[in-house]
Length: 241
Ligand SMILES: Nc1ncnc2c1ncn2[C@@H]1O[C@H](COP(=O)(O)OP(=O)(O)OP(=O)(O)O)[C@@H](O)[C@H]1O
Image 1 (cartoon, protein in one colour):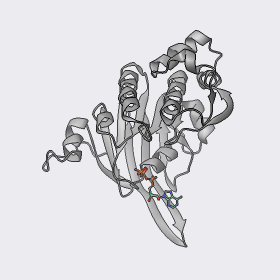
Image 2 (tube, helix red, strand yellow):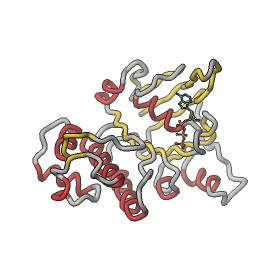
Image 3 (tube, protein in one colour):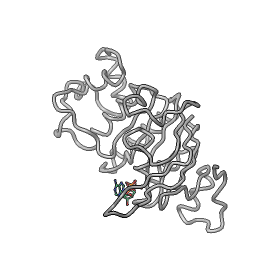
């Protein structure tokens, strides 16, 4: 379980304080939790704070009750937090096989790697020995990144807009990958997304706007509000303290 307590992130811009996140309180213990909200609301900043890429100005982060606030990205990764960037990273000189093996923390044989790659819809034989460089498409990189997260099998897998830069065909199969992960994963998937189809498979949706938690609840409660189907629905089903 992930707990965020009073997380704020304030930067100094041109000599003035800019509040990017303000008093975020959130508990995440479901299998599949989606964070959504308007552009610039603070979602990616929050994901980077959870992963340990940036340090919040105030607040505490607990993973299964343990305070991990002072741990850096590597230490948090060891505790079981994986983070997939909005734009996947290229790893010049490393092959898909290398990356998936490194992610899993053990030497995998080709058939084990093939199994993981096929889970993300990649025809393994074509990819195992490919170098992870700019010759791969955005969709292929995304899937390789997801394969690495599956190989790691962590407690908390964080994805920042996995749909970004993906064509509709690849997007359809990406949704299937997430649906399958949702069924099979032991830990939690925390996913930042603007896509209705991703939000529709979430157990819980958190809406972040203007740097704070605007709404939180099950998809049945939050989706009508987001899609404008019900102006009167009760949004704050379980606003957390
Ligand atoms: N270090 C920083 N200095 C100044 N402004 C920043 C900094 N980091 C983030 N911001 C600003 O904070 C706001 C929130 O950014 P963030 O990337 O977290 O938003 P987001 O909700 O993920 O947006 P999007 O949906 O467009 O990806 C933006 O206005 C961004 O420009």
